[in-house]
Length: 325
Length: 272
Image 1 (cartoon, rainbow over the protein chains, first blue to last red):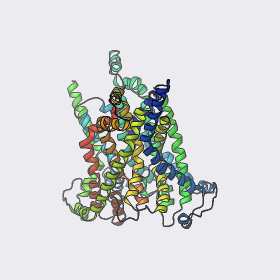
Image 2 (image 1 turned 90 degrees about the horizontal axis):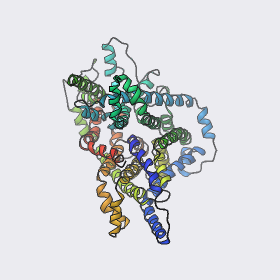
Image 3 (image 1 turned 120 degrees about the horizontal axis):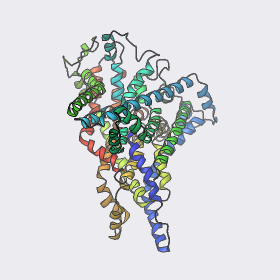
Image 4 (image 1 turned 45 degrees about the vertical axis):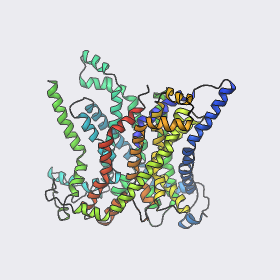
């Protein structure tokens, strides 16, 4: 999902030019435009219908779930009573709520901080056009293309307390062993490490494309003025990369907020909720036990949507401001 | 002097790549390790007593799952293309009123967490009996790819010169004819790009599979791995062998189609 940043940016930017075409003047032209409108909407109709049935309706059902008090029985026969915001109140008062919210915030911000800074360092490094640079850069995409369950299960085994390679490496260095996935102090860090690993390629690719848009003349001029590599980075690269950086980070926020697979497969949010985030909590309420609690699960999900939308709108605003074509 | 520095950079690049890909190497290494040495401490860094028992287990247990994933992936690709290419043509070239809000909605749609979609789909599928079915899974998986597909196609088709479509109109071609005979052939690269990602996301999907197909007879490979982890936490060679096999599409796509991905992503930039 994350690749869309660059193309999506274009799509928004270019729409501006598209809508201002040909104000209808004479009647003939107007008829032409009108029949064009019919054709245009005929081509759009399938996607509009699709969005209504497969996006709007599931979302509507989700809101409905959260506003009624569903049990397993009423889930099937549809006789749940309307309870307004009771589910939300219950969820917020639940002992898991604050830990889940805090973990979501920590998971998101720490992930982004590391993914972005490592991705930026690598982008600058790979931009130097040495031998094999493009091949190695392509190999860096691998973690991002692998199915998440593959990455998550590989990291699970690497973090295994007794037989994992990570602990064995720590032992070789004379450091104490860590119960990465089974200790409440470390589980969040373990899933963070795996998630940072997965997100680096995305940051690398977008920031690299940003570097390509910075004029080489600037660096040449700076060299003539006697700037060293460090100065060039902080005086030229970093300021000029700010728009792309903002977009990378905001998009990263939106996508990291909804990370679910990694955490669920590695720790199931445990032990004792120590790596539970809003998305794993919502899943656990709805699908994680024999007796599902759909209404609170939907309420948690909707809280998550609200948070994602706030960052999403900030992202779209930033993007529009930066690309006002 | 510059040549010597470049040589150092290549070496550093190789080392960094090796660190980055270490987990992938480790997955392959463990997949070849015999069960008896799985708990050995410290573990062997190379598969010195390499065995293919893990892969035999994959051939024994996982083939049906792989088949289902292939089917779901291909189905998702078809559905995504059929829905998104015409819509993008309309947005890019026919300029419908209300096209702009629609693009905005598509951008927002990409940000909705899948877990929430899964819950909504579950409630709907339960009512109409579509749980545990392959078409149900295809539809759910396509929700990840359709907004992305429309946006990629729109970006690309915006770059097709209006002179081309205008010439077709003068020759008497209607919108459909223009779309089929001019727009689609030119958009080949973006069709490959969208298909690639649609396939990969459907192939990798775990949330929709586990919520909407949790009790089905026909389950995708992600659930095959998940059940493996749950059932036998001793035979990690089988689990990792399955993981290796499940990674093949990603590897193939990276090797074969990398230039298409690049072409698709830079397509939008050609215009200005």
